Length: 367
Image (tube, rainbow, N blue to C red; front, side):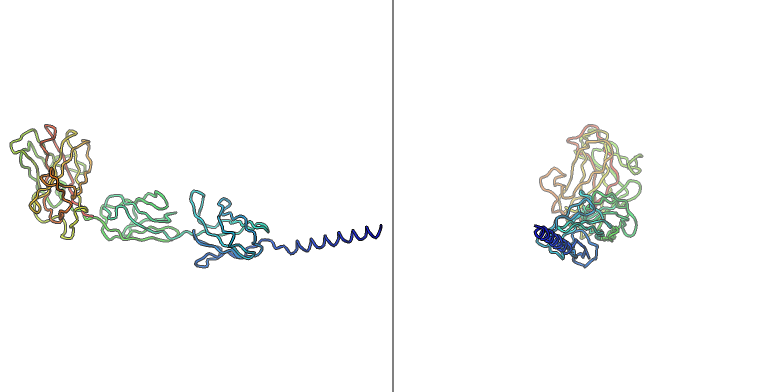
C-alpha cells in the first residue's frame, strides 16, 4: 500500500514537471518591428499603407486596435507565428488622426502594445469649380488630405479660405488675380500646387469714367437718360426712363462701337458672358440687352426685374436670340470675338408704364 502511495506521488510530480516544461516552451507575443509597404518605413505608416508586423508568438491573431478606439480589419490567412499583415485605415468619423499613437495586437499568446506614427500624406488638388476662375469671385478647390492647413497662397500671396471638408476648400480670389498664377496649399504633409487660369474680364463701362465705352447716348422712345446718377453699387450709374411713348416702337442706349472687346481666339459663345448690375423703379420692368449686328443678325436677351434692389445679372452669350431677343435661333454658334457694342434698353411691349431701369458696371467675360 505504501509503495502504491509512493508511486502515485512520484507520478503526480512527473506530470507537474512536464506541464511546467510545456508552459516554459510557450512563447509570449512579442513585436520586433512594424514595416510599412511600400517604402519600408519603420514603425511609421501613411493611411492605406500595408504594414508587415514581425516578431514572435504572433499566431492566432484575434484583434488589432489603433489608438485604443479603432478596430482594424485583417486577413487571418496572412498570420503566422512570426508575422502578419494589415492595412492602416483612416476614417474621420471613427476618430482617425495623425501622429504617434498606440496600437495593440491581441494574439493567442497574449497582447502587446507598441507605438506607431501615422503620417499625413501630401495634399493633392484634383480640380477647381469653376474650371476657369474669375478674379474677385469664390473658387472651390477639390482634392485630398486637406487637414491642418497652414497656408493657402496665390502667386505667393495669402488668400482667405474656408475648409468645407478634407476634400473641399472655398477660397476667395482677389480682384486683381492674374491668369497663370500658382495656387499653393500647404499642410504638415507637404504642399499641393496648381496653376489657375482666370477668365478674361473686359470692363465696358462703370459710368465713373472707366471702361472701353465711356460716352453713352440714348435713342428711340426714351423719356429721360442720365449716365451719372449718384448712389450706385460702386459710384455713379445710368438711369433710362420710358414713360409710354410708342413713336418709334423701340428705345435703348449705347456706348458706341469700335474695336472688338475680346481677342480673336475667344470664339466659343458658351464661354462668354455679360455681367451687369441692375435695378429698377418697379418689379416687372423688362430689360432688353442687345449686341451689335453680327453677321447680319441682331441678337438680344430680355429679362424682367423681380427685385428692385441692386443685383448682378449674368447672361451667357449663347442664350441670346435673334430678332432682338424674341426669335427662335440662339447665339450658341455666335463668334463672341466679333462683339464690339452692347446696348441696354427697355422692352416696351411688356413692361410697366413708366419704367425706370438702372444699370452699372457692364462687363464682358470669357472663361
